[in-house]
Image 1 (cartoon, rainbow, N blue to C red):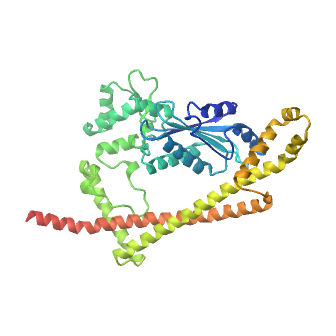
Image 2 (cartoon, helix red, strand yellow):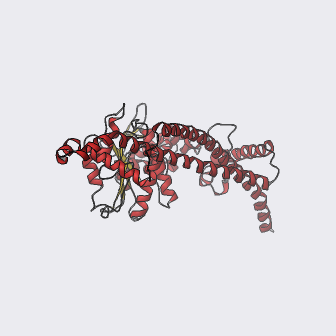
Image 3 (cartoon, helix red, strand yellow):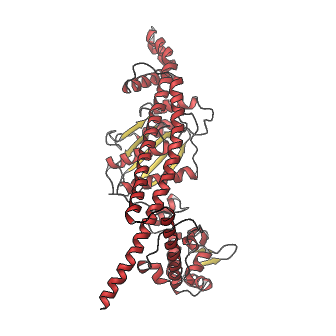
Length: 446
């Protein structure tokens, strides 16, 4: 289970970079990587990029920490996951330094990236949306690598400190949720549940929302902040045996949902109301499934499989093209950065080489010399012998951006079709299995 948290770097960029690159924490710097810059000169390169930005923002960079469950991963795997995370969330447009620390009881990654993009000089905007994107990508990468993840929704609105407290068994919210879950089956209505909570020592405050406070708890906790299944409406529905509002399917007559396996559904076994709703829902979804097959001219199971496989193949092809375009854009942006830096600082470097007092010259242009040498090394590693035209690179980057937008639109549409056909196929499989199960039941009765 990887936990991520991020914070801005306002004034101590060099200090923060030195800390995460500490050889004692990174296996002698074997677990240190960077993109768009060198770990040794990252602070200077960050500053150089910021000088070209119109909207510099208030921060020098951002520091992201990705911590893994103890014993779940190796340092090498954690570092690779961190690199994949950095490339996906930053798109190859921001300089960054990634390190993996192994000096504590749990392996964790440190990612420091520039607050300004070297590709378009736009400022990185950190908000809830960007953090949720980081969280989703991190969770997906953990799943792909066989690591555990936090279940979506269970930590909604939960701070890192609160998550840690819940793991330690000291979260008031976790205890209140457990108490509500335990009392719902034996409560006759909402008022009865409130009385039972009071008998367990909870102080209740009524207002626009019902709030509870345990003994020694400083502030009241509104029930609605516990999650969608703990609002007053949801709790009342759970007591009455109705499905929670948060778990009811969205009203969309065109959308086809999976059939519910009533026989193996715990909720259906516990609630007669939910079981009745599930039967009606299954009839509707079965009708929608058959209509879909008719409308799309699918008359056999083999045709259904062929169409589903065709969309999967199309999605894979589009995804590969999309990633290739993104990688080329990232490589081109990096080439544009180093080429521009090389051209701009070449006269200063030539003056430095011709200077009779190099030490004196260096004292006034140290950062410029370091940046020029870093760009020269990067261009040599890219095997660039002649500097490419800035206008041609910019035109190519613009064309690639347009191509990426088109590919993403096509990929998104194809992925929706894959999901739709997957649902249809699973529903058909469920419908075809019903007669077989009934035949087995009749055979067993004989």
